[in-house]
Image 1 (cartoon, one colour):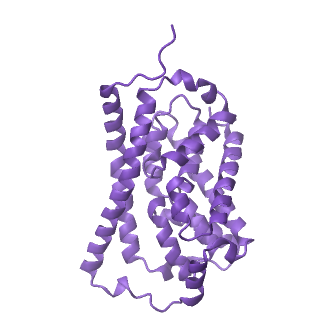
Image 2 (tube, rainbow, N blue to C red):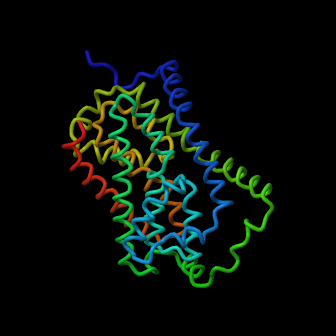
Length: 309
């Protein structure tokens, strides 16, 4: 007799939910506090001065800025908008926007912690390396696009009209007020991110404890199906990059390359990000970026299937 496809147990669900929640919350808290400090204490001119004049080198540097300036994908778009308005090249901004949520110490630590016992070091290195590579490819692609096809009209006007002047806003405040503002921004980011994280944890906990995993064996056993399925799931769950590894690790039936695709595509493009990106970029660019990321990450992960079990 076949087992039922759905068997919900409050005890199993509660244990899985609380376990993943407690593991992920410290990383979200750390990431949002850092984003608040960066917002208040890092002048935009510092980043622009760091960039080399060579376009390729500037895009590559944008792809690794997350190591120095870690940022959650939930809070990076407002920062990118300010930096573009103050002179950061759009290509470098796109590379930073896509890479920073993945290529940063917080995400590296959380990924390593989540995949302990599952080749954590190798998996973490692959996630950061693939995230950097894809972000740089996207940034280089933007180099060949007219700026009007990338930025919304209102943002484009701010790039044209604004300049170095007027950059003294937060820095003119007393240190204590800036620190309080940074903590306030961090708390608001934390509450916003936690809504998506709790929903994602709930869905993942139901999936891992109540749904008969045998139903998904046809998907999990074929990389060509497992990879796009996990990327689609990442887009729907809209998790934070500082904690999504804890949820990906629960999908034990899926191959490592599918989990890798989940962890690279999700922080770059999901449902909430599609709306957030539209505040800065044209809808056509956002749609093209989403399709391009889906295809490129999927193909790269298929090639990596010979390396990862």
